[in-house]
Image (tube, rainbow, N blue to C red; front, side, top):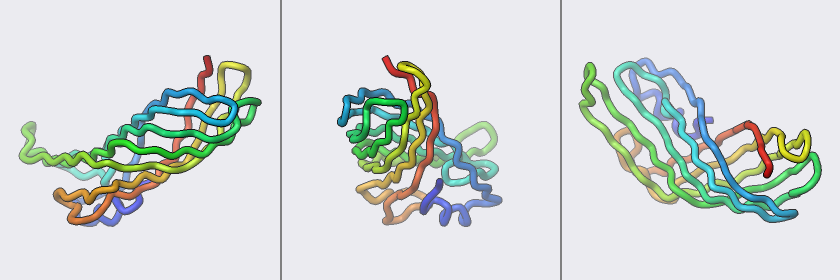
Length: 158
């Protein structure tokens, strides 16, 4: 989900919303508490437009609280880390300008893991990500980046 990024889409030429996100999380869950490291990358986060490229990368360290046993394992998650938006303009095969901004941010949310046995399952969650600092570059002037992200994936337990 794009959050406040969609309102900036109107300033781009022929903007089409597209927010596919790829990532991985690695962690450990006890019976109640757990910890994970999560990274994600969303190409064309601010919308798809000819002659430009943009993305958002995030790397978060999260505390998990939930049910760490049984076939259905709900949890809540929250943590801090890096949120890095990027925007560049392309003139043919040459980049005419590029702008990145590293910002400290947080995420909070929750989800559920459904295990099909002791080692394989599926996981889905919904998280809200927000920068703590203003993201001052190109289409953002004096505001924080704020968005929701839904994810689903394969869960492997060792």
